[in-house]
Length: 416
Image (cartoon, helix red, strand yellow):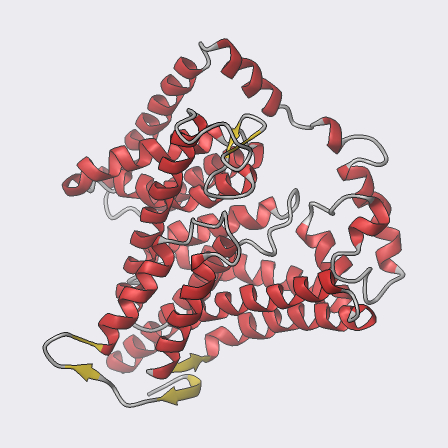
């Protein structure tokens, strides 16, 4: 029994005495994720390794489950809308480069969906483990750089905000959120065997997250952590587990609060913290600020089925839109804009269902969907359409959905 709408098969390869084909694919996949936080150079190591990983994986054959069709169609229509809007600007280098990068990064989302839809348990473990390693690497570099161990250059710290090995403190902070969720979930589930590894890893990641001084990242970390905890409480196996999760959550926030108050005893940190913690900054306000530009763009976009064209919002308003939903209409036209909104709603629907119903990958889904959920919320205040971590978690959520649907069909078949 199968619900695949497409299958590409190749003979299984094995190198006796060394490792088999799946081990090779698993290694490249894990290593690609683990090194994914090194993005200070372009193209980054991740950009090369993900292409190698996709090629190795595709060589072994794959299938497309029908549950993935909404994701594939909506993602494709969003990208197609961008290329349609690009037609008037093919002679301009930046918009062309922007759209081909969009095609590349969206293709990785499709890969993560197809990849995690099969051998799901093993591949989700590799993904989350590799991602946690990448967060520890990034957080360690960022923290050491903030304390000046690598010099005082702008390539390490931007305006007092940790960002290495990224180019933007906001992206750096948000990248760490999924790692925080994975490790916090390990703590709340009582994974005592790895406590010696989880606690120091979480401590360095949270420290780096704080030092990015990114309001959006702080908010995303808090909201998504509460969401993971709510999912765990709702789906707890017993009353004892529910109480343990609640107590653990209180403990986590108590420790973080004490650490935060201790850090804020340093006057320079305290002043900068409250400056960054303000709801709005100077560049947000006024008719020509971020929010003013967004409001002024709406009637213009209603009159433009193809939007402004990729990367052309800033030519009209002097700033990027800093809103992924407005940018979807501005860069990808009506087709791309409505497709992006539909993809968001569809992802929220399947994600909440995954996190609140029993299936073999419910716990992994609670981490990956919570991250995806807050990324999509951040889309209202920043451009997320080229964030690799967004496509990783988004694709994984849809891969889990395909695996979950296959598991349900197999269970129904065995019971009939």
